[in-house]
Structures are given as C-alpha cells and as structure tokens.
Image 1 (tube, one colour):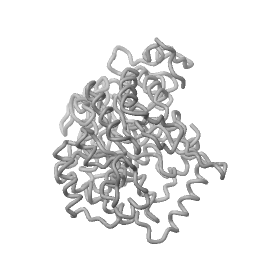
Image 2 (cartoon, helix red, strand yellow):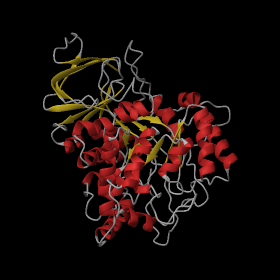
Image 3 (cartoon, one colour):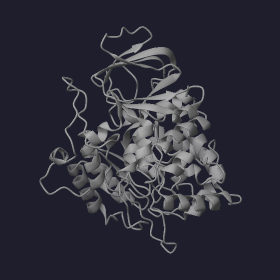
Length: 490
C-alpha cells in the first residue's frame, strides 16, 4: 500500500478500494458491518440475531467462569448473557457444549512487521517488512480482535490497512495505529527515522497525529529532552506515549510523564553499573547484571512503587523473550507452518544456537521478569499483554498472543486473571472499555469460542473455533489456511 495523495481522505481511499463482486450487507440491520466478498470468504456466521447456548463464559472481568450460559447477539452487540435467556424464534443457535467463550484479546504490542529472513548469509542490516496480508488474518484467527501496533516501520501502510479493515474490504482485527518510532541517533535499522533534537520530536508527533496516529512509541536511543518534548506534544492532544527504552531508565521516563513501558525489566537499564545519562549501555552487560537481581531487592521494589504512584502501565511481552531462554520456548508446528520456508530455516538455525548456549543469563532474567510482573500487579499496577513478533522470528502474530496468556499463567496469575490482563486491561488503557474488552451486555460482540476449558487448562485458549468481531463469526481454520507459508514475505 502507498501513501495517500495529498488531500485524499482515508475514508475516500477505503471507499475506492476495488474488489470483485457486490458488497454484502445483512438486510435492514445497519449496525452489522458491510463486508466485501474477500472478507465473506472467511465468515461462518453473519446473522444479525444469533445465540450461543450451553457455553462456559469467562467474561474478562477477572471473575470465575460461569457454566451453562447463553449469550445472545443482536446487530453485532451483546444483548443478553445468562443461564435463562429467552431466545427469539428467529435466532440462529450455536450449541456451545464443551466450549468456552472468552473476550476477544486486545494485543497491546502487536506489530504488523516481522524480521526478514537473511537468505544472504553476508547480510548484516536488520530489515522488518510489513506483513499486511498474513498478520491481520493470523491475529484474528487466534482470537485477537483488537491490536495496538506499538511502533511502526510503515505507518502509512498500517493506517491504510486499518481503513480497509474498518470498511469491510479486508479481513483483520480492529487497529489502533502507532506512529513511527521516536528513535534517537543510533538506530539499528534504516527503517527508523533518527530524531535530530527537541523540535524534530515535537514536529514528528504533531505531524503523525494529524495523519491519524493514535499513540506513539519512544525507542532505545531517544534522549530525555526529546522524550519530554514528544510526551508534551502528544499529551496536548490527548494521545499517549509508551516506550521500549534503553538510554533512559524507567524511573526517569515515569518522571517525564510516559504513560506505558514496554517489555518490563528486560529493557530497564537504570540498574546497570556506570549507566550514563541519555546513553544506552552495552546490552550484554545490562542483561548479565539483571540476572543478579531479585524482585525483593530495594531497587526493584522502589521502582514498582514509583511506577504505580505515577500511574505508568507496563506491557508484558514474555513470548519474544522466552525465545532467548535456552530450551524453554516450545517448537510450535503452527508457527513453523505459518512461515515462509526461508524464514523457517533461518529461525530453526538460530533456535539451535540458543539451545546450545551454556550458563545463559536469560534463564534467570526471564524468571525475574515474571516475578516483577506479578509483584507489579499486586502493588496495584496496570499490566497489559502483547507478543512483539520480532526477535529472531519465533513469535508469530496471534499465536504469540495466545502464548503470552499461557506465560502469564506460568508467572503465577490465574487463567481468568491472565485473560483479563490480555483483554479488558488493554481496552481500559486505550479508553475503549465501554465498547470492548469483556463479555457484557451492550458491548460489541468481540468474543472467541474455544474448545475446552481455559479456566482449568490455559492451553485450551489455542483451540479456537470461531472468532466474533462486531457479531460476525469468522472461521479460524480458514484464516490460518490463507496465511500459512507467507509470514516473512507479506
């Protein structure tokens, strides 16, 4: 996709997006989305009045699962939830026996790009091509009905993709699009603009808000002055800023007014010996030192209290860091099937190298991060969930979001708590919880029907049958089939 011609609105662009055949609109029900033939191909249910009966419901509020429920959907929204719901005569009924409804996941670190396979062994420049075809399908197939892109290498592509999805022209989740990375001097990929100072930071934020960005992500080499200017410009227009930081510690960022911090302790460098202001320390040294810390230490407990007091949220992205721990990340056949063959070969080679590492600090650091996230929530902090499909390619859109929920349970959260973190918490942070994030009367019918009982076995979250977005039920298997073999290419 290309940048829109000057003066052309994204709405007009979506309206002119041509696809063969007539558009599909359920008769006389304007609240239901209008879908192109390309999207209809993945739809199993588009009835304006639909009931799911005999189903277990995990509503996303952190409360216990409810058995033998009926959920009634009308015109894309949830009309009733309960054990004794009277069904209208003309309702289409889905028998949910042996299955569970959970809210659609809200992925809060869900990029639309992925590391390109290095088919040339001499290649040294990291590149992250946009996965505008495969990722929207895989996010939705796995039950991720809303994403925040949380950093973009192709912001215009993201925004135009969002426009096409909202218009029913392409299939995919609801998208909250982040502007381009706010990176300082020293970017490791040419796909990121390097800020030249305070004015550039401020102007970049203002420009991309005007273009449609709904959040920003500060990156590793940004200076305190640039971050401060970016936050002030964003907040002046009601837009939030998150960060994957390195040159700036979490305490400093909280004091500057940042709203959210990505990845947790994995990337906080403030405890590294000799840390200089506005300078990113050696990564290996920072990780090695992190492995010596305990969540009960004065430093980390103080950080937790400070973040909670400043109302700074944290986004958990455990799956991408799990791939750094020798022998820990499962080799998921679904992930391998999704990959371009060259991407699969490159990933498996790197996986073997990681597995052979001796005395890796990542084993201790990964456990520390899980302890930190649990302690942060216990202290009153807001934890959200994402996957971050970067690293060396072992984390794929959608499947990584499911793995994140599983890892939250490994960290000590109950399954219903983990599902709440991965759904309602993100919706609240973005200010859309009145519409999405939980299964409640009046909200949009964004839900996932899975086989089994994730409340007892969280891995059942992978057994997706149907994904409802605005009341339309998408066939997960068909979406997966259409995306398989293309991740790493498009």
